[in-house]
Image (tube, rainbow, N blue to C red; front, side):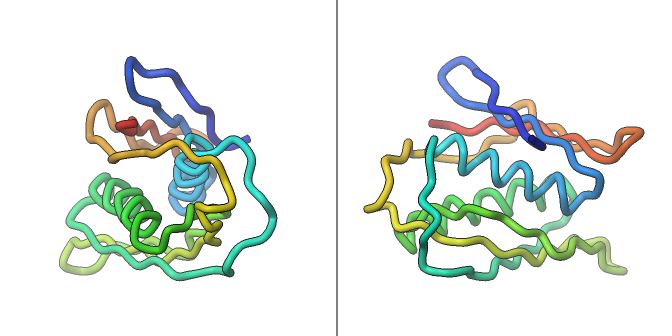
Length: 139
């Protein structure tokens, strides 16, 4: 499993690994979904796209996860089965991400509300065999 949920005071944290930056972003997003709901049905309303741009790589991770929380609230669906197709740095230094997820209607599951992504203790770093990330969520 590319992510693990970690107890964190009154919050919950996800520690994730991946061979590529795209893999670790998707693993953290999968951890966000797992922190929200223990079991997820196989059905849903299909896949939807997610695009995010930020000034730094760490901000891109924060903004991506924040966008998933926002989309959960707006679409009334829990985003699951995350795929991050590309992460690129532009010549101007901005970072961009193209991803997709499958939405599960919140009416079909019992989900814990993740209120927000935090920068508290956030870590995103290259390691010998890929990438590691650690993100704390406010519940």
